[in-house]
Image (cartoon, rainbow, N blue to C red; front, side, top):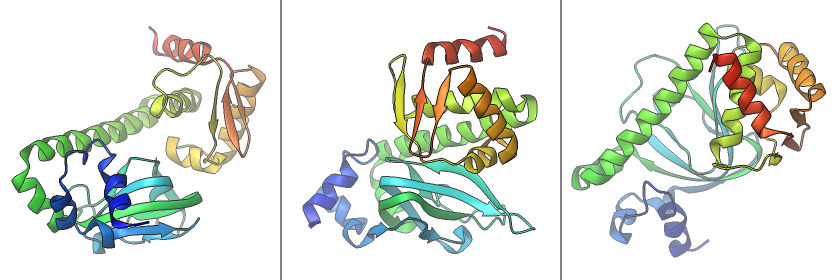
Length: 236
């Protein structure tokens, strides 16, 4: 991949599409490109990491290990997502977050927080867009936490499936097929449940002909029925 192709990859993202070639150079984008294989760690400790990462291709899980050494997944990211030190300063929680490639190889671009801050000073429009992006991510995490506190597991699973459906498909057809990059254990961690419970509930949803879940794909058999079921659970 040559220099121009790398610039195009990063500038295809909505946040960076107005960057000039000079600004891309100031971010050292060329040297920050990396190809990572399945299960490779992008970083193991975010507290010792001062970079922002842009995921061009593939899937990355963000998580940490609890006191017993169990993996806790916080987010699953795919094409176009940004991760790393999005707060632009060292996290204060003391939590050693990791980022790991999953399912298949990934293409990632990274740059240092200090280089990015220099661009933001000169580009207030980019600073506003980045602030909105961070705010949206925090809102999603807050919604997940609220769901775990106030909703039962079935409701949380249904809402997660709907989120999965619409994340990259604004207007999916009544029947929609997508690549599956999640295990039952991944979903359980994301919605605050156990793998056994998630497996049981997914089997029930398959019997209700709402979804078909395999290692390679997730088939949403009736997206309208799924959305209506969630609205009914909400009391709408």
